[in-house]
Image (cartoon, rainbow over all chains, first blue to last red; front, top):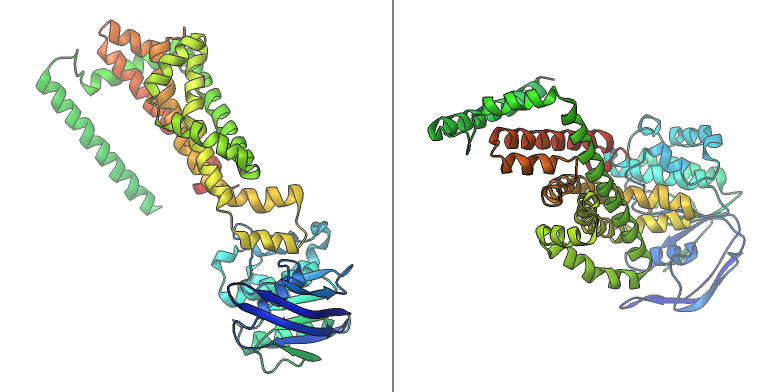
Length: 186
Length: 249
């Protein structure tokens, strides 16, 4: 179980103020709150990209963490498929799985395209596909449905629903239709 | 295809204009010693093309300057990498590179003639001209890498060689190849200038020097034309190999 205890983080102003919360091992937990409330900061701390100023995070040891950044962060000089294959060591053996995921996110047509040619929504879905392809015990997804239309938002929810019994999704979101197992309001 | 044809026609028209102007000026001066007519130069180049020594001279200069260019490019890239990884290396190299960039090529050539055997001078000069250019651009590319992509690599556990070759190097390649391409022309020009002053036994520079000494102006122009053509050919080959901004890498 991942536990946050009195977690705090400031930049030029306080972002997280004494946040405590216990995440279950599986399920979907939504991070809610207005812009600037610290949702992305919390995800970055959980991903190991930031250190908190105070408090502690426990229960992450030994867990594989997979991230989908809000802006996608795909390598612009690689095709979409290669962006997925890059995150696994024996990628070539798992090529079919990567293609299957792209197909699931309706990106099969763009597998050989570079990210520069894709729309914001396509990049967002590609980042989610990459996160799922990498796999993990904990998925940290930052605004995964922000740039998606209703159809594609359903896809993202479906992906989480399929896996939520095996992994934990911590998702910063404003999507009112996302059914969650709990939420943390910041 | 049609666009390429129109572009080629435009280039040919511009070339024709300048050659015609050259012809008119040559007819006006009517002094082959100063300005030979284009036809005389092309004829002399054609004659040279039929001799084995032309290719031997071209090859010797190409190898000499090319090796300097490759050495300078490799050293520039490696030193940029060292400066990026180790800040003291950058502090140490910064003033040296600034001085090298600001020093006139002629001064370097004269100094290097005193240091090295004449055969080595053009290669050294070519390397010296390319090195700071590649160093600066590659370093800019390295420091300008997108930190967001670095974080992406970190969270997906992309480390070591894989990170270097698949995430970092491709981000730097456009800056590196731009410098390497500019450096190609620079190295060639500076290398021939060094040959003119150092006079290696078999070299384009020596042929240019002798043409000037014996007032064989068409020869001087023909060799210059050969240098221009070779330089353009190398640039075209470079673009074909590496694409625009290294996008093929």
